[in-house]
Length: 378
Image (cartoon, rainbow, N blue to C red; front, side, top):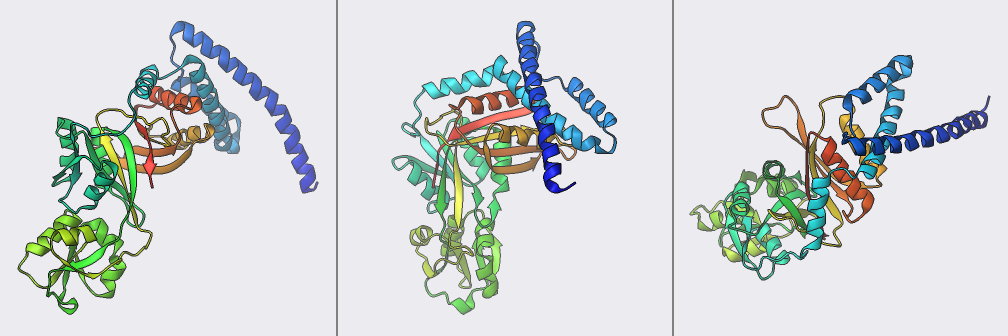
């Protein structure tokens, strides 16, 4: 039997499967209507597991493969039931209410919180997003979250990811902790400069101060000149420190803005490894604001600590035609190797399928948080 004959056999089997699967979905719809009348939840984990275990037992050495097929079928069936029942009503109401309200980011009557000091990249970004707002600087990232939490700031602007150095894990840990809404994002092109006090010579420099992310983004340059990178809380704060230090053998990696602010001489520009070096900043808020043209959704969730759990959830996004652009895992505090997952997907909650999926997951998952639907300015 040649390949064409084998493929014809597969096609014949698929043609037999299609009406059976269609019939299964029709019956799932009837099950949903039954559950609606009696207030029964869509997900019955015990029954699903019994079915999968039974499949594995019947299929011998192909059990795990066939289980995957059945699991996907049950996920699709459950998605259909959620659509009929209208799951996640509390979240659905919250999102619909936000869509009715003013959807423009404005800090009118308040200020915007950033980490660092004047000249920091966070401040530059905040000024681009909120050109008329008062910007307040705080020493630590958590101080920014606390400022928003206490109402001292309407919004906070924090970095979450760099195209060269990757994720800012501290930011994601704080997002997991505070569960504030993400209401905006901005991608800032980062051009790092090597700066020092007037009179400092290249050959005399031994230590270069900056934030760990900036040092990582410029590590090729540092290696070439055998400079030692020294971690500092923020690039602009490092610039301020170098400007005020009596030492003449230190330098800083910072922005041109910070160099001018603290009277430093720029020894070399564009020292980052990647000329397209970009940092993504997000805007955090205690109030949910959804722009009608929003194109990115952020979520946090955890899954059962068993084989295939994450795979099946990610399959649900694919089933809804949604593209994941970010998946970040962070350990759950005081747990035994369990994780929260932070996900960014492209989509808008005004799309019915997207809203249905998010609301369904809010019902099904042990810990789920809708962080927001927002625009990302590039």
